[in-house]
Image 1 (cartoon, rainbow, N blue to C red):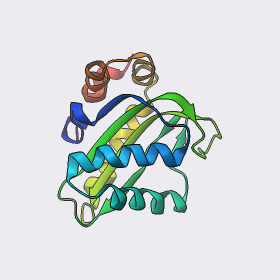
Image 2 (cartoon, one colour):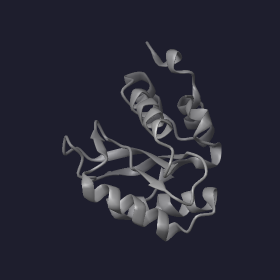
Image 3 (cartoon, rainbow, N blue to C red):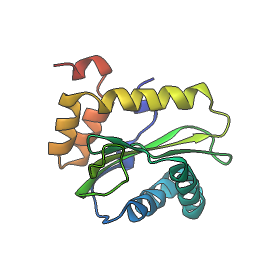
Image 4 (cartoon, one colour):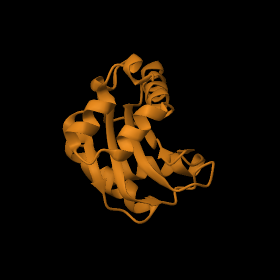
Length: 154
């Protein structure tokens, strides 16, 4: 699975302004609502319910909030580079500055897990993460996100 199957240039936010985890999830819900046509409050509530199970802050300044929704027909991703790192209750207790949001249909099953695994692999690549942190342009961020996986290896 390629990330180009999950994310469009509109789904890339190069400088998200948020000072809290809740605010970041609200802003991402607004953008996801525009992409999916699903009410932003429904998206936000889905993300909050998932966060109550445990933080999606996976460490190294990265969070991968995700959730499943009945009203969604295909997997949708959004990526945001935060203007300033925020506390996300991450497992390593470090602030988060890169967020990849993933929403999947309730019946996505294995595809949802494959998408999460693909995002996780990208976010473990030091070269890709450095490019995402240093890029300020939507097009450059989108290019890094959608490069074939093998090209991230140094």
